Image 1 (cartoon, rainbow, N blue to C red):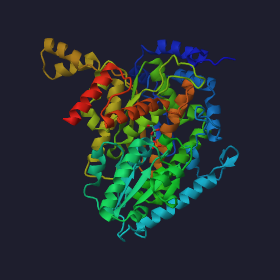
Image 2 (image 1 turned 135 degrees about the vertical axis):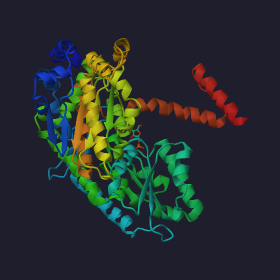
Image 3 (image 1 turned 60 degrees about the horizontal axis):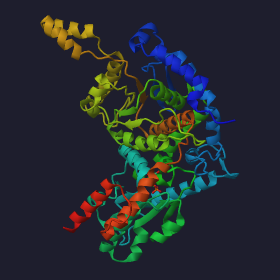
Image 4 (image 1 turned 90 degrees about the horizontal axis):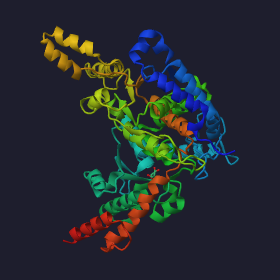
Length: 550
Ligand code: F6P
């Protein structure tokens, strides 16, 4: 039987018809008509509370979305992922970030072998190493205590650990500072190393493949910086450790394989913070806190694996996202954490979501005929309110947004947190309700404005509302709730990938630019443009080479 694109299924078409009956409705009216709406459209799991009632959906919408999920066999795909089947078909790999945080005694098999002993083995090595560095037992080459850790990695080998270390800053040891260098722009390394003492600095070179140009270039320059100060090449052994799947390349770089923390090809780069890629996290907050992070993710995994689709938080978020992207015509998705510690969460989700679901071909190799992954973006509230919220409120695009906040802050300074959260709740209410022309007019008249001006101004002060939001609330941002939050988004992305029929776990699209960059590097190094570029690129390269020479 030839594969069917999801938009050709009767379930998809039923949703299209349903959208036609929904598009004229307003959330205000849905709330007015059903006092139980918020209660019926909210749920708790793994320490997170989700209210999804402020989306333009009804119980019928949910029924139809669940039917779509059943038609694409979402449950079967979840089971296949958890069973270690090679669902990343273009790379022939299992997808088992869930094994890295499997806190149960359940074995997880890849090609007939239980991977849990290996996972636990690396965790034990991490625990020992983290204990030694944090206690001061692991010393630098000259006998000094390590005070600064610099993680060198990019993409999944940077964004996850950097986001988590920032999010868990209140748990960090004061004696150990963790820094991140990712960009090949020398400015990043130079500015990070400025002020650091080589004798007290430990580098983690984090790269799944250990062949990423940015990371190897930064690591080489970091090694030069170290050796300029410490001279003795044997000092590298005390100041460099690696996290990788590629022991050969780690050794070729000059890092003792005894100082390498392993992970495996069934861990996708953007899903790897739970592996040894999380070493900077464990160093920053301690190994026990790192385990709490894994436990939070595991709790969400268990929920995702076992809850009914209709009561399943990642599934619901994924399906509501499908509703917005494929039926309501949204092209972006905004992530708005009302928590300064989560300031890198939108950037982290950009890779997680856009590298996973930025695909235009189905698993079977057919061109999709519908939108797939949206543009993901965002900033912490309340800064975003004073920058781009205007467009969300009154612009012409539909921008679904996730609001993420906590009941308690780690820094209860005066009434800051209450003011922050007042904005959090107010924005979702305003986006949902809007303000009618009559409400705007009456406010102006009540303030004493003359009628003609009030009628004109009221048009500008009218808000359409009906702007969809999800509200995610947690007690406090802890390692456990953070782990659950990240896993929630991982599984939301998985759900959407299954509905769209794409492989969320490869990333061929980033390869072409990398290949061309190698060709161009040789040309700008030699000062001669020899290959066949388009006229624009050719002229730009010649101009660059000329100006470098001048
Ligand atoms: O950007 C492409 C990519 O392959 C990502 O998927 C990955 O996270 C990143 O490069 C870094 O790769 P590595 O960990 O192998 O250095």
